[in-house]
Length: 211
Image 1 (cartoon, rainbow, N blue to C red):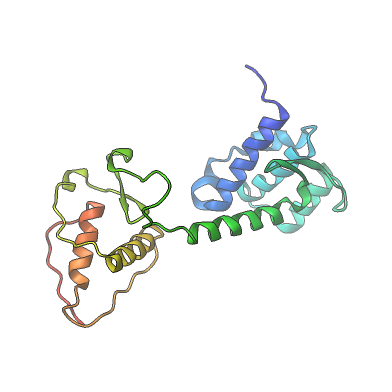
Image 2: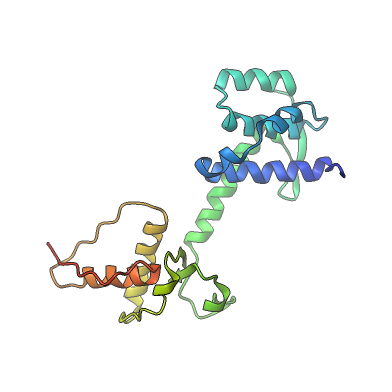
């Protein structure tokens, strides 16, 4: 078996750390703690640092224990250890701060995207998606029952409808609470029925406005 070199190992650990930051509940259980413990002896201090960061999540290191491990395996807080990050070289002691800025600017760029523009870029087409993946106005969604994909929607997609569908789909995918409020007969139930069809969850039930 060919050993992975230090640069590639550091990139793998950085990718794993980013995944854990994105979702601790999903990715933390996948971290193998014994190999991470072995990496505390690695000659690359950045590799040791990332191993400690991942172990902090995996075995639940308290701040005091993490600080002790960092001093033992890396050195005092003022010690610099430079390594590659985003096509440059940085002190990995401040890498979490740089990562925080990177995530912030990425999220800002996503917010500024024009999902409904007709100019530029390749559009996502239905043939680009799998059987159990759909798309609602720029939001990728899971399709729970592919057998219901032939249920025809009666929705007329206007610019205002696109904005509402995008907002609803994003809230559902983010697993957040959703409240629709309007005058009776404005179309709340109809809209929810149509969204259910797009998700493959429509079962033909009729919903009544209560407000």
